[in-house]
Each structure stands twice: as C-alpha cells, then as structure tokens.
Length: 93
Image 1 (cartoon, rainbow, N blue to C red):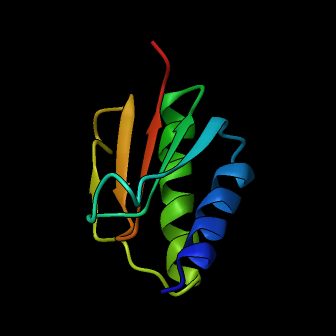
Image 2 (cartoon, rainbow, N blue to C red):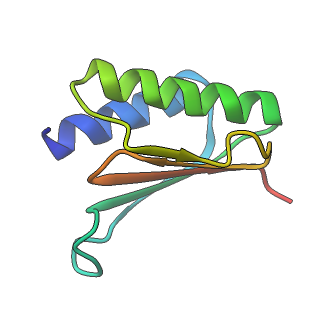
C-alpha cells in the first residue's frame, strides 16, 4: 500500500468527522516499525468512536489494512495500527 495514499485516507477520515488538533509526524528516522504517527483529538467519546470507525473504513477503501485497534471500549483513547501508520485519537483531559 502506498504510504501517501494511506495517509491521505486517514487524514480525510479525521477531517470528515471534525477531529481537532490533528498532527502528523514522520518517524522513519526513529523506528523501522512504522513511518508515520497521526495524533488527533475528539470532543466526546461518541466522536472518538466515530473517528476510529471512519479511519478504518477509509483505510480499507483505499486498499489498506487495519492490523489492530486498541482502546475502543475505553472511551477516551483509541490506537489504530494501519501498518505503516499508527493513529492515536484521544479526548483531552
């Protein structure tokens, strides 16, 4: 899967559901496990879950794969493993 295409899909998904404070970090020089880290904030547990679902949908539609999801049931933080990209979505304290 093309990294740029996957990143674009993830960012579009976050924009669709109005994520806040979206930041993208290029970590290729820090680790060989993944190339990008995307961090975003949600205003509520409901929005957080909607953001996580939309990122998964958009990644799959772009030809990517979701390798894992953590924290979906917790309500204040979700981590999505898209292979070359890790997405953190959280509610600020």
